[in-house]
Length: 248
Length: 309
Image (cartoon, rainbow over all chains, first blue to last red; front, side, top):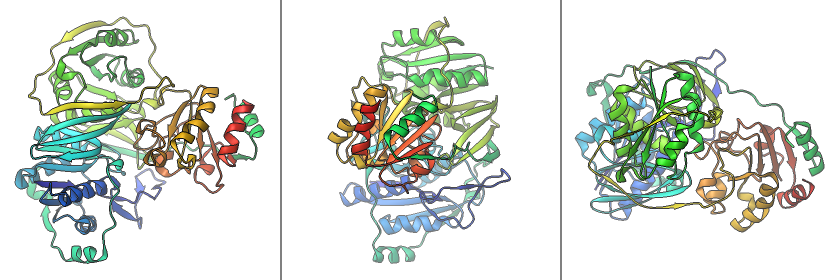
């Protein structure tokens, strides 16, 4: 079974992004970038399925600037067999990404595509579902558990109110949530080996997809600021403050 | 212009987010139809028809739609799409699951999780875990949108819309529902409650999670939520998780108990009216975000608070 895993290079999840004062966007200069946490879970899941004998080949795919090779090396170090970079210097939208991934799927013919449920920069939560629609494959999103057999993927999804179980006929799309697994730290020998593994590079222009934006960002601003914190040191004072604010 | 609002429900009643998504929809376009997909949904359709501002309620009933799986529901929405300019739903788990599938089939981009409507084609949405708000204009002829329900007030009751049965689109089954595990609770619903108290991993166990927080929740008539860490540790069900990728809430009063306040948690609560933080650690990030902070041991402070209220 072949699993294609999509990974994205994003701002590190520990960092609170700064908004540029001129409203043009966020400041990513010299900011630490990492693999999208949900995508890391997706790679880990693919590796575990391989270790359990369910998958035979894991391909990591990223679409983005050359620096995305770092992210692919992380995926290789964790256990992916191959890595593909579709180099794309311009900003593209989830729909464009889904169309590009569809072409890779048609070439590589995986049985499953794993994606993180959302990227922590745009927080769109769309790409996996869009890819499923374009391929006309079933989808299991926000999964917390996965069991694979020859013909089906049995997934537990986190939904409003609890969890839901679905059985999908392969090939299928899976988007991962954080509770699915705890990603491993790559060992040093694996990191070194990953550095030597060639990454297949393609250019986005080769895919002949219209990358015209559907959305225009007019401005980016900070959210409304909250008032300064007042600290109290006993319950009576807390209640007094709540009464003052007309909450109690 | 006409809008189709896909209304989420749990098989028995409309999701509380639906009335709020309707407010957002009416801001974009005053002509809104509601679509309900499922099985045995007559009562839910009646409730939808009573929401003010709804033109028609479309009832799509079929066994295949019973659990609102993404494949058959999105197909039904796509079959109706030629009649609509805007297709919108709350950003509930179902909305998030289904709507991007619709957008891709219509070859348009989706605008996820809007918090404000600037004009019929321009909206505001949070990015970077809510640390930035983007104003986004859609160039597509058809718009597909999901709504962050907490950012809008619920639409009023008082309408009398016509209910029309429509034929769901038929597709070959590719996914099968095989079970579910839903939390039974008579507590207020987390995303709609006026007061929410939430516990972190400091609560130490699921027994302590309930024994410490339940009395306070009862006194305040509050819903109970949890941090990701508490859910991961098994102290609370996943349905109680508050945060960037859990539930986003905006109650009048939010009390964080033993929660450090990671960026991802704060993203889920920062639009609350009033935030109180109780934590042993004065340096915890939440202690600088809250309106009022109390440094203390939650196992002493919370029972004291219950007694004093």
